[in-house]
Image 1 (cartoon, rainbow, N blue to C red):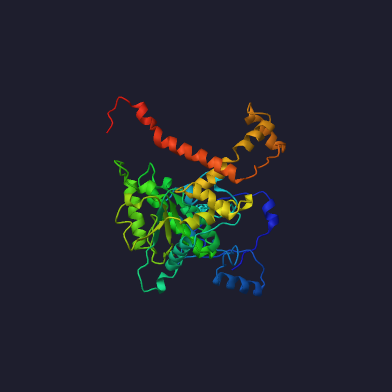
Image 2: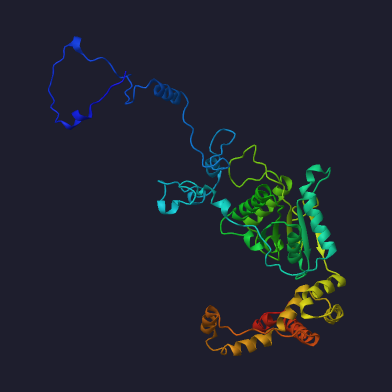
Length: 430
């Protein structure tokens, strides 16, 4: 039944009268009667009837969009991901009407900030590594073998350690050469330092390691690149030196790394466990100076493969030769420099070259107007592009040897002075 209204009647004043109704003249019950204003065209009615039979589908943002993806249970995947994440609301979901609209944002929609954590860039690129560098063949073979062996562990009938521990003397290029290998292999690693292995909150460092591990797994899955989790100077954060105190975070970090070695594809960061949540196996590389200070169960065979790095004389000459190549220093002259300062770490030769710049920098400061008030003048001149041209010094073997002797003299003064004993003369010597 269709009802039609005369719109002209709506403009007339309305007068209401009370009309008594007898029981026999009660109005029929029209509670189930549908009222609609439409044409009497039968074809239009059939179209509308078919529209009611088939509910209208919600328009998608894009056919390739994953913002409306449903999980295996038919629930919104991003919403469930945020609900399972153990984070604050500002990091998981900024829903309009729940928090101030100023913080909800309009870039991807009012409720789209659920992926805030996944937009942060924590991987490392090596655009700053410009030039030709030498990588020791033994070092290269060990790192490449460990990475590839972990990525093909599912086809190997062998137990593959997840962690490679590169240890050795200070300043021998452990971290730098590893980064050179990453660049050569096209790997996008996630790199941590020992300073991140402690926190004022219990459990935070362990959770951070698991998050970084899962981030490296996301690089493999989403970007199609190999990734590695690298922790530099791990013994500085987990080592035991004398009477140092063991904290809860030290224990949790060790337990986290041990668990990753035993279950590299099942990593939780506090959310609900899901059967389909399988993490890619990501190789871990750690560097340090003395692994004997670390928990023995962590560094045992099967969990960590140890590699002691001590460059040979040939390795040192080749690395330093590449370092001085643009300065016109020949390989024979490099060999002379290395033989003059034996038993020195690789970073010594870099510091030696850096010290030759001191006189040229002081001359450049004088050309800029002197040391007085250089801070204000330097910033102003740099902003205006009026800084004087810096002329690097001409590198010679004599200048390098002179700076090398100056460095060794400083080393000897530190070893011989023992100023702490001068400050505590009243204490008995042990």
